Image (cartoon, rainbow, N blue to C red; front, top):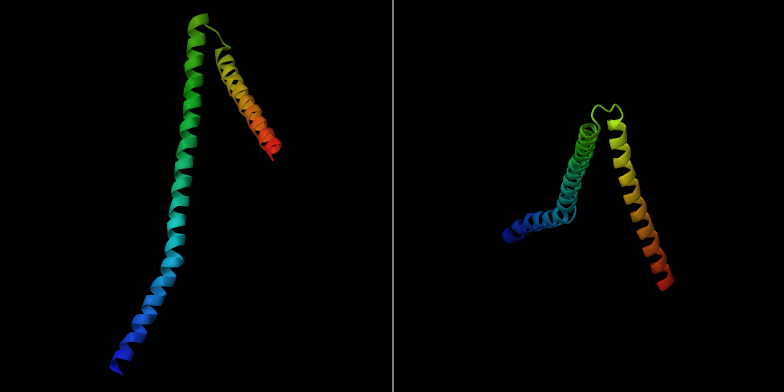
Length: 107
């Protein structure tokens, strides 16, 4: 009888450990990765933002140096950078549509 009284709590503890490992531990691990992904995405977007600002300032400095005292150098620099990004986005859009149409033709 003494063995049986020790087996019941051990069995209950093993069952709760199993349930916790299947539910809470997995959820905690998933939430940790989601939080880490959000932090990485935020830092990456800030890095891209500062890179684009810096690139615009470098281009503006080159234009201002080339033309002397130009008051329009900043506008031209950001318009040129925006144009390059627009062309890049258009090329990616065309490639996406081309791949999508080839996938649908194969079905």
